[in-house]
Length: 436
Image 1 (cartoon, rainbow, N blue to C red):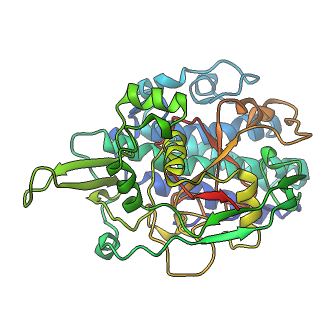
Image 2 (cartoon, helix red, strand yellow):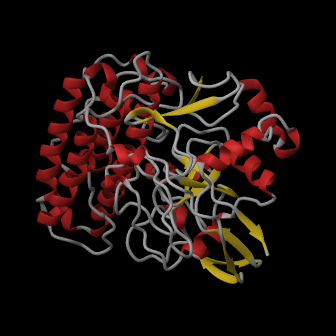
């Protein structure tokens, strides 16, 4: 399961453009391949979208922003434009997001045909002189990165769908190696110290980036420290055993209200069962994964926790969450490889007995304490594509680092993901920080 790094910054040949385009598009179809037509139409909650919708929406993006303006004679279906527009107000009206699971027609088969139709037209366009225009290539690369984002969303969303069914079937027929579920000793949590000072934050303009990653600017950091690894399931169980979900002094006011309203007592996808071989007070835990329900490993990173929970856990430890600027400064110089989608694990993996920071890229998106706001001097791009990020800079928290279902080549040190504080169906986890 690999995807191509499409962060090209200079004009490239039509042949290379076609190769990059087909690599990303083929990956989406490969991710959808294990799913039946019935799987692909379910919307299990308002925050998720059906697999069929993801496949159609990314196709609509290429059709709307590249084919219709640039390929003479190409005509888009206005019904598809209404059904598969996500949030682009400037483009036109949209089908309500919470009702995407009601789109039984067009069928999954028809969406496959739609993708083929658009791909054929896109290849024709990519082999024309139009594709030599750097502005066209910039928009194409945005579209490819956009589709990679939806590859991650496809897996996040289908995990929730499958967990909501009675059978709780795995996403793929073959399970990961059994050794993955054998708990090992958790490596000790240690700290790396950073001096702080004035640091440059944001993308430097070389290669692709989303608009919210810039402009690059200076930020003053106080001395701080960050944990060498992610918080584990075993440590989260200690938090729970110490009344972590019952004590209001650990929680932000809105978080305390939320967990009491929802009844949260543990991370999402955890399930509790009384052990058949012990007293009723002895509890065994399992966790739903893309490989189905598996025993909870104590040494694996905790995943599917909200910002509310991450912040409460950090307060319980006496520490805090890092700011996004601390995280970026600490991760500079580290490889952006890790437990990402190309590994095929589809689940966070335990830390290795290594020195220094690890698990920075892959495994889980790491919650930061930073609200999602604009960098100094930020201006959305003109036109409809300017609605891509800037309009969401309210009531969201920033996460960094990518996760186990993030496509390879898609993460950067400056990449800013964002979710509401209550969200936890995405692969969100925790790294601790503190002042020095």
